[in-house]
Amino acid sequence: MTLLHIGIDDTDSPSGGCTTYLCARLVESLSALNVNFVDYPLLIRLNPNVPFRTRGNAALCLRVKIDDDFENRVKQIVLEEIERGADLSFKNTNSGVAFYEGEAIPDMLEKFSKKAMQNIVIINEALKIAETVGAEICTFKNARGVIGALAAVGTLLENDHTYELTTYRTPENYGKPRKLDIDSVRNMDSATSPNTFCNIDDGRILITPHGPDPILYGIRGDTAEVVYAAHNMVTSLEPIERWVIFRSNQGTDMHLRFLPSISQVRPYLSVILNGEVSNRSKTISGGHVIMQIKDHTGNIDCAAYEPTGAFREVIKNLIPGDLVRVYGGVRPASSLHPLTINLEKIEILKLAPLIVKFNPKCTKCGKRMTSAGKNKGFKCKKCGLKLTEIEKSTFEISRNIAEKLYLPPARAHRHLTRPKERINKLTKKSETMFAPWHNP
Image 1 (cartoon, rainbow, N blue to C red):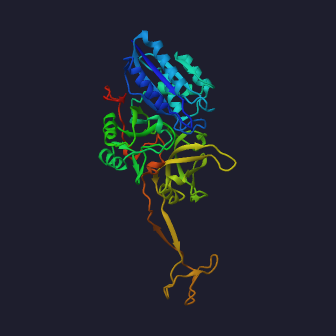
Image 2: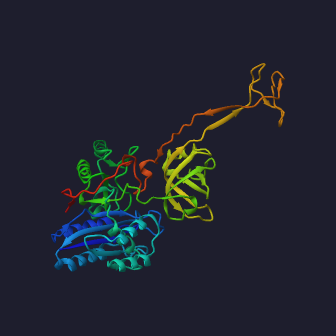
Image 3: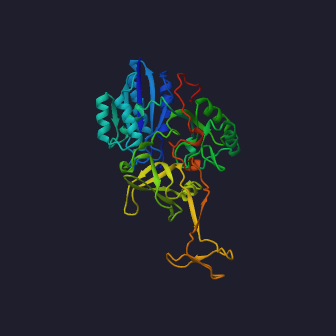
């Protein structure tokens, strides 16, 4: 028996297609061969900031034990499915496949996977890694898909992961409005939250995408059992062709890396960074809120965009001297804006005192006094009293924000953002697989 790891990436496009759907079809095809799946299909979200990604930047991995006699047949099925299902007519769709044999994943490949989640990886680097570890690769067009395919193979998700049960539409419904019983989704959320997450936000249903892809809905949660139970609570008003449970790095913050200083920030990274607020925020066209933080190495803009809703009010209430920890993707500088961190969340570490000063009250009549001129004290316009040996009164005003972590609403989360339901929660890999985990 051979343990074969199959990585797939970059088969979709903005106009259709879906790498997870292609993977779901492969699950059906390979199940017909009676292969032994040793893990759920892995749905791995890579660096969400890369400029050449398509939609959610997801790569997939299947891990199967097969008889040696079946190996070539399995590889043939995978390649035929990609040729049939990938949207290769789209100029930026550059599918890639990686086949790796072995019980253990090399450390070099694990490190490569982590880099692909957090940084920019070039094609030649991926090709060199594949050659070094002995992975067989198959590429289409410019070969960029091999990056994600190798990264998916190298991702083990041993220390934390989530699950997603994804359902798929029948082809005649592609491009049409998705039809679910909304009350059943609300009831499912009430029954399964916080063990499922990002189902609903302020009445808005989040489990359905909006594009022309084959996905009907996806439910994310902490265990395979809970997403399966949640799926059975949702009433679909259109046929479901198939469904699969994926194990994933969604909702784990695996894309974020801590940087010790602002000077180390680079475009397209996903960063965690400590700093001191250096100015009051400003609201620009479109309702986006921009603030700036600093440390001993420099300063950098941070942006809370209009879709983050009330989260922007937190940013507006920060003042110079507040110590914060920001989380987000780095947008490169352009002619219109400097290097900027697009905020995914913010933690207020220490609030600075908010001090306001008032002119003193007249000691004779009690009316608020006015300045008599620079270094000349104060005078009372009502009674004419002048006082030189007196200073302004100072008061500390309580802040309407607290020293804690703030997240935008769920509708503004990235796939990888750890939601409030998973704060301080880690899910360890189970040694057994829940059944059923796919149909067909």
